[in-house]
Image (cartoon, rainbow, N blue to C red; front, side, top):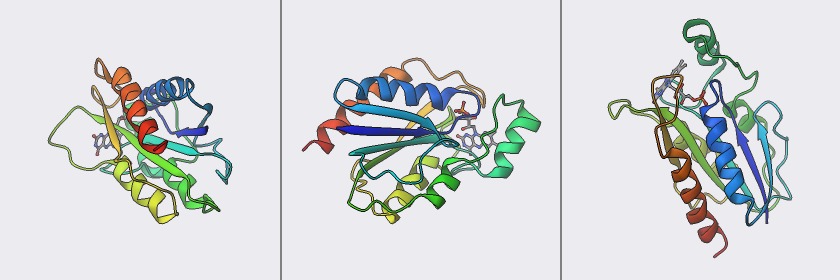
Length: 167
Ligand SMILES: Cc1cc2nc3c(=O)[nH]c(=O)nc-3n(C[C@H](O)[C@H](O)[C@H](O)COP(=O)(O)O)c2cc1C
């Protein structure tokens, strides 16, 4: 199996989850991990695509929310291209490819909205097989860190995904 993990991250929390997912996938697959700025224009040739990013303003980030993260909240990194723009530019796969989405969000049950839900919707529109539900991993505040146990939970999620995709 060949897997591609594409992530976007301003403070590094989503990147940590992406690497935990890639490490776990590495036991059953050949894995490439790239951030959204370096992500390819086509994913043909992969058997599984994993897409992850932070939730900003209830959905995927936008140029304005990424700029706000840096100017108002001192985020250390501002991706030039987020997952939203990468998906906008991504070629439709020539054969159906399994895809899963995850996001990071603050640890507040009162805040609605999920970047991963929007990602999964976009992936489905592009023709990906999106039978596995999106997953959310929680951070403390805007900058993190991740809550205890989230990286282990990410690894467990991947195990469940692999068994579903391989079926
Ligand atoms: C401008 C902005 C808007 C945000 N909006 C939301 C939101 O609607 N819901 C939420 O749960 N978290 C929100 N957050 C918090 C981010 O989800 C959090 O910073 C992110 O998970 C950290 O991941 P990263 O380290 O990979 O950037 C927002 C953060 C910023 C900077």
